[in-house]
Image (tube, rainbow, N blue to C red; front, side, top):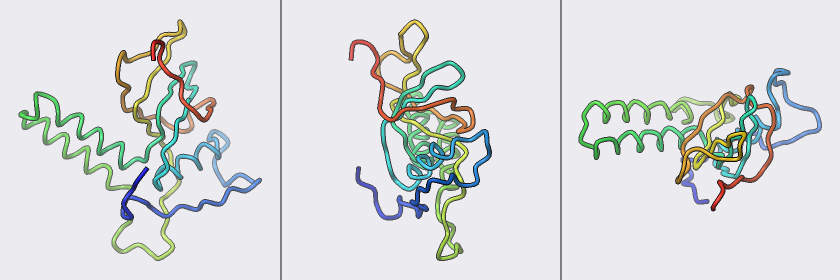
Length: 158
């Protein structure tokens, strides 16, 4: 993984035996991994969410919105003006992950609430996976995740 310096945001990388002040409905360890991702880390992650399994590569929120914007730009071969406007607005959403110009020296990103995956697959109870072919972008609430494991599941046939 190579990130430019401006893509990497400060994060408190201290893990302790005592969980941070996350609400009881949030997994503080998963939240910490997402905060690492928002600082530039990418890693394979498999999530259990409401009885469904989702597996993909954990990415930062800014990259998620940049990739989402790129997907929308490709609609109609990039010739649809409305889709280009929507793509621009999606790209702008990623700015919430940028350090404000007037930020204090010790500024860090606020605690993460959402988790973002690229190349994601949703696995069905019968053992199949969606989508067929290339994975997709996926976004979900951290407090909706029932459990997780580091690493990726692969769709059958890969």
